[in-house]
Amino acid sequence: MALKDAAYDVDNALTREGYKGMSFENAFGGALSFMRRTYTKDLTGVDLAVTGVPFDQAVTHRPGTRMGPRAIREASALQPCDPPYGWDINPLTDFSVADYGDLAFDYADIPKFPQALTDHITGILDAGAGALCLGGDHYISFPILRAYAAKFGPLSLLQFDAHSDTWSDDDMSRVDHGTMFYKAVKEGLIVPERSVQVGIRTVCEEDLGVNVIDAREVYEQGVAATVAKIKSILGDHQTYITFDIDCLDPAFAPGTGTPVSGGLSSAQALHMLRDLDGVNMVGGDVVEVSPPYDVGMATAVAGAHVAMELMCLYCATLKRQSSQS
Image (tube, rainbow, N blue to C red; front, side, top):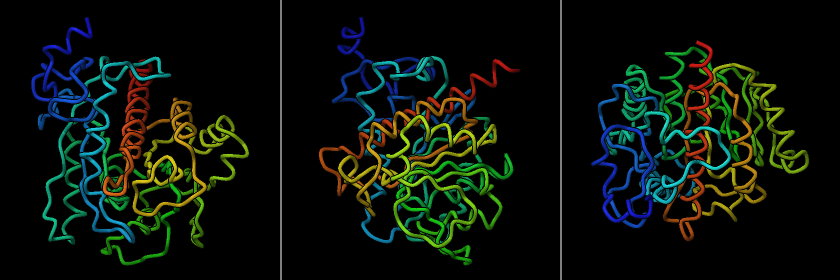
């Protein structure tokens, strides 16, 4: 039946009734939303809103991540015809997931961007949905965390990254994708001792008390031990998960602004995300996918798969909370 559906299913992002269901339209055609989810600005009854943040004016090296949300959506088109591998839940059929479109902002008025993004995420949270953001450079996590902390209080941060992004910067008005977690700690948005950075392999003198599991430790101790350590630090604390695609080695994700050799494989990252089931995830993002430097869409494909795993983690959290209530 699924194969026959491809003969007449088209533009599910626009024509689907409701927010649930698989998509069997041809992967090479149709309107592109994330996982063929329905495009909507009405979040009534929506569990998770996927939204793009096409911003890259904070980069220190190669630009292009403003094209990331579009590329991730395109790369995701092959995935919604099957349930997510390795999970006992299917967010595509069991939860209301919508594509909320992209943040609208004036690209020439950078000082107003942070508040515009915070307001955008606040609107999603006020509607009762969670947010999964597609970047964009990594600075976007800072305005997003401001919205999340306003609702939930100080959060745990689980950060997959080649860089700690905690270089000192006490000018809160500066827009920089290398200093935003320094600012997040200083503003009290995240709790450093309950936060973890995974995959780090660059030097930064400021760790601010955040727990670091560098890339070599991941390789030496393996996925299972790494996940166990992460869970022991996070506990049941409400957690925001941010995944900088440069956490992956450039062999797996060449299309990014500041690539660093010696990173995680896509297999290691996806296995870790699946095994993190049980973490109390309240939101997340995938950032730093830069299509102009990509090869064969490898980075966009990795980004789409990471975003799918984050969607599963978030929906698994909702399922646990529902069963406990």
